[in-house]
Length: 155
Image 1: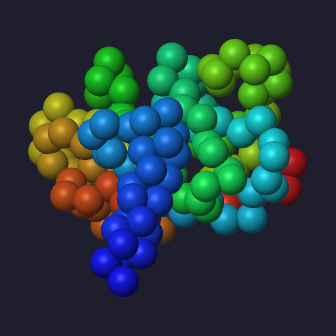
Image 2 (image 1 turned 135 degrees about the horizontal axis):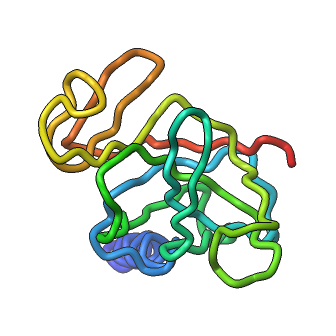
C-alpha cells in the first residue's frame, strides 16, 4: 500500500514539474478548461492595458496537455510594474514565443496579475509586489496567485 501511495505522489510530482517548462517558484496556478489535446499550445504572461495585450514572449511556457488539465508557471523576473494576464496561445511558428501570427485561444477572465511598486497602485487593496486583482468583484490577494483558471475560446 505504501508503495502505491509513493508512486502516486511521485507521479503527481512529475506532472507538476514537467507541466510548463519545469517551474521553480510556481508563482501562478490554475485549471485549463475545454482546450483540445495534441495542439501546439503555450502559456504566456502578457501586459494588459485598455483591453489590449502586449506580449512578453520571452517567458512563454509549454503546456503538456497529456499530463494534466492545469498549469503552474513562474512569473518572469524582468517584468516591470503594471497589469498582466496569463493567456494560452497557438504557437504558429513553433518558436515558443507569443508573437505576430500566434492566436490567443483562451477567453479573457476577470483576473489580472498586478505587479505593484507600492500599496494601492493601480487598484485599491493592492500590496507592493505581485497580486491577483479580480475586476469582477474588486477583490485582491497578494498571498496566493492560484485559481487563475483559463477557458478555451473555441478558436
